[in-house]
Image (cartoon, rainbow, N blue to C red):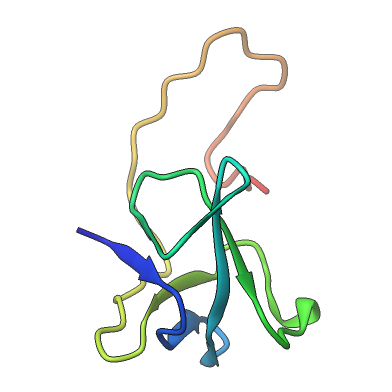
Length: 91
């Protein structure tokens, strides 16, 4: 099970940055740890917001996750406003 705990060193994949969470909040209540699937706010100290991007992944420094540059998926979309064709990029 994935977990984030206070003051445990974390890595932000894609930039190889290491940070310590200083606060974990669930429903505006302070917590000492949060689990995968929780809607939590993770607050880091001394982090440069310019270095964080959409798509960055937070993981354990000792056990980093593997990442991929592409994947194959089947997508079902209802009420199409704009036709989606091969090579269409999503942002």
